Image 1 (cartoon, rainbow, N blue to C red):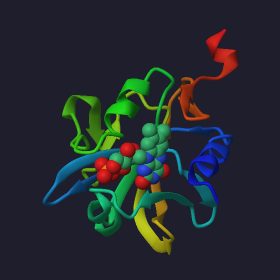
Image 2: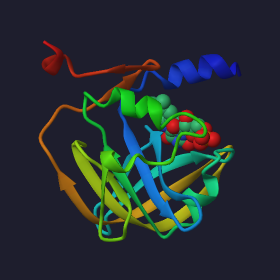
Image 3: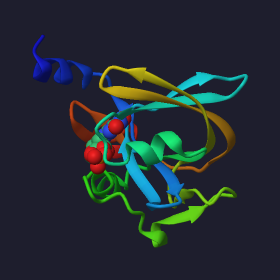
Length: 159
Ligand SMILES: Cc1cc2nc3c(=O)[nH]c(=O)nc-3n(C[C@H](O)[C@H](O)[C@H](O)COP(=O)(O)O)c2cc1C
C-alpha cells in the first residue's frame, strides 16, 4: 500500500480540530493538536483520540490521570498550527484557563471536555487513549475544520 496515497484518502474524512492538554509534574502544562477525536459511549461518557507512538509527549499523554479536549473555533487555525509543531507543546498561559484538576482549557474554544484516563490500547504506530468525561462546557461559535490536509470552515459560516 502506498502510504502517501493512504494518508490522502484518510484526509477525505473531514474533521474538527482539538487541542489535547495535560499538566505533567515534570514537563508542565502541554497542548497538542489532534483531529482523531471521536465520541465512544454515552453511559459511561467516553471519548477517544489516538497518539503517535513516537510523539515527544507520548509519556505525558499516556501516563497522566487527567487530560482535556478543547474543540477549536474557526478563528484558531494559527493556534492549531503552533501546537502541532515538535518542541512547541508548552502552553502559553494567557491562552488557557485551568480546570479543577489544573489541566489547561483553551480560551475561546467551542467545547471543553475534562477527562480521566479510562483505557489505553496499542494500535499499530499509535495508541488509542480513551477518556471518561468528568465535566464539559460548550460555547457559541463556528468550528475549525480540517479537510484534505487543509484548514477550512463551514460554508454556512464562510458566506
Ligand atoms: C490537524 C492536525 C491533526 C493532528 N492529529 C493528530 C492526532 O490525532 N494524533 C497525533 O498523535 N498527532 C496529531 N497531529 C500531529 C501533532 O499535532 C504534532 O504535529 C505531532 O505530535 C508533532 O510531533 P511531537 O508530538 O513529537 O511534537 C495532528 C496535527 C494536525 C496539524
